Length: 190
Image (tube, rainbow, N blue to C red; front, side, top):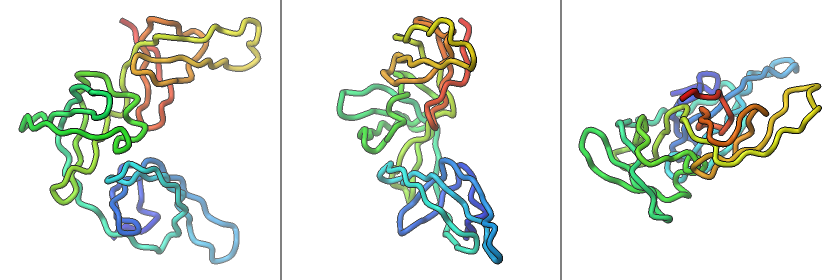
């Protein structure tokens, strides 16, 4: 059993009868006497892909969920379904965009480093690599003269996802994007 204070990013546990994985967690301690630690969690339902934000108190117990992870790669999308293949068995499976959630905006044909996630032998979802390299296809112009603080602008990458990038990033360049929250990590040379 997990205590709320044991939860870390990537922990899989059962909450309200469904399997969840922790996407992000922060801890706070109320100033009131006797106040226990509160874990503010952002978690994703492994079966539906739905994101949920909850504050969980320390002392509350949650059963662990056994998740079988296998290496997989992304093949293609037909507009409705996204097709994947497990690396060891070459077994193909598909997921709907609703099942994938925001991860669908970072899928590029041939993407490897994906993990298929099975709960009780049933496909629950996929886990993307922490970062992916994507090419910038559109970028807003830089605002000249506004240099008092770091300037970020909107850009669109080859998968159609919008990412906020520093002003020096331009069309045709490749950038590394964090798949967990879609933020810019770095520019990639070559």
